[in-house]
Length: 166
Image (tube, rainbow, N blue to C red; front, side):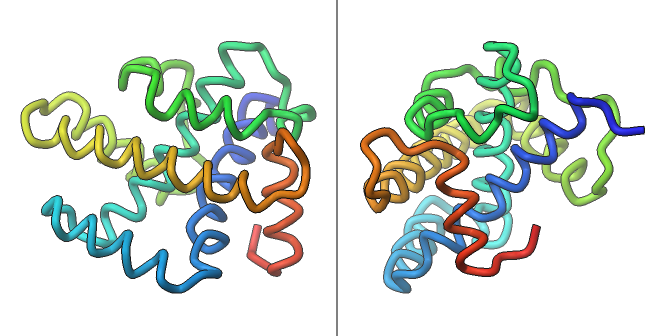
């Protein structure tokens, strides 16, 4: 049986996974992001996966902090997730995660994030840069929405319209 906490984490992961495909509807954005990752000495595939997990961690941290049930995750404002991406410390983003992960890919990505967070030095700088990339992505997607305060649900609707896999 799946707990509400596991369901919440899965919704956060889905948010992280759909952000870059939605952003990349404008192909030049993908090129610019990859150029930035390269200039920061971050492998593109690792960097893009870390952006996904960073977004999931930020959304999860906010939802846990506010005791938001999984059934209400869609109401979470994108601006709040963006603020968490750049405003929360790494350890705050890692707090309250599930003990086990249904998807091994998520577990590995969280472990890589932890490694980056605890290693310090250059990797801390890379996490800071990735946090700004997450914030930028959320800000651009929010600006595309016709509503004044877009939510995670608005992003999910965009993903459904783009037929992105769940």
